[in-house]
Image (cartoon, rainbow over all chains, first blue to last red; front, top):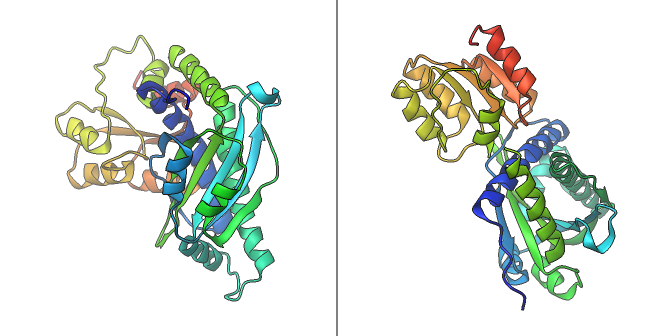
Length: 205
Length: 109
């Protein structure tokens, strides 16, 4: 087992503010997509081990999507996979807002999850990259599990990561609840690279 | 981080005492103590968010000039804070030019 990799308090604070700005952009996109006012809260930043991630995801039934990102510099670059975990009740809330039918077809469900993932990942990752002066490229999002025990899927799935940078986002839709967790699964080398970039930002202040 | 960014964006020649608060509740307390003639208010904060702070300022009739600086770029957020009595709304990340423009516009510098 490697040395525990941690972000310093300053690095966390810096990343939190960067994510805050990125999430504001994502919140605006979500508000436009759903036609509601979105209340933002302060994102929580942390480094999680695979066991932590499984605990966070829990044993309940959730839906999740995955989307790979990279900066074009290969294996030493900034790269990873963005995982969004949705609770199933929030999924129902979203379907209501978008006037989806009660007996929604599987394909439409997929589309909804992928749409929301694209909006959140796109705004969040682009926002982070922009503020760090980087450019990121993405694969299309895909469904990791739907109404399933994602924890089990994560265990079976060969996701190439050692630790996850966890960015917990909580969007409250007015008069409704919607919650999702965005996890950036990154190899240690990419997290270290990110930490270095945060240090540069801090020095510039 | 957000506070340091703001400090950097403020004109160096501006001779004012600056107080920082780490959440809405602390900020409101500083305003009550008369340490907030001009207030730069974030909306997304722990303890008490910016909307609540604006509401308290109004309810308690506190005298201060509030400039909201927020990452919440929904047009509705802008409309709401202006209704709640904010003088201006500046999007994050802070654009120094925009901030100067607002301060100059209100004759604060």
